Length: 170
Image: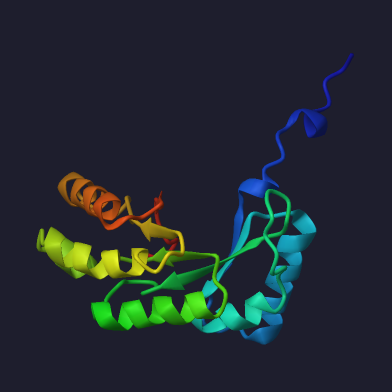
């Protein structure tokens, strides 16, 4: 029997988060992104927090398990994490209130550059306490090993559920 590469490949779609983070896109692009994610069976749709409510309207509300439809993921502090912790917390609260199933959070890289783990912890922990799963964006391609180690440790201590290698920016 001849192997069928299409049949023998694993279904990768349920492992993909479909992102639309281009600030020059509007409602129509958000709707298309959500439609594409549903059509292909992607795991999630990742949008700027400003678009969480719009995207929520195009995604199923009921997530009763695998295959229930894409999760809504909102980025917080994107793309550089260079906003005060209180602003980042408010952005996270608003994204959660708009129906985000998960938050992708950019940490305070300035504090990290200074080796200030306590400030990074104070930046992330209040967001993790909201009860929405948090994924911390590490930017592994840009961090030296000591900063990366510190960020991983602080992210775990803060209560992050996931770590993400990078944002795709920079």
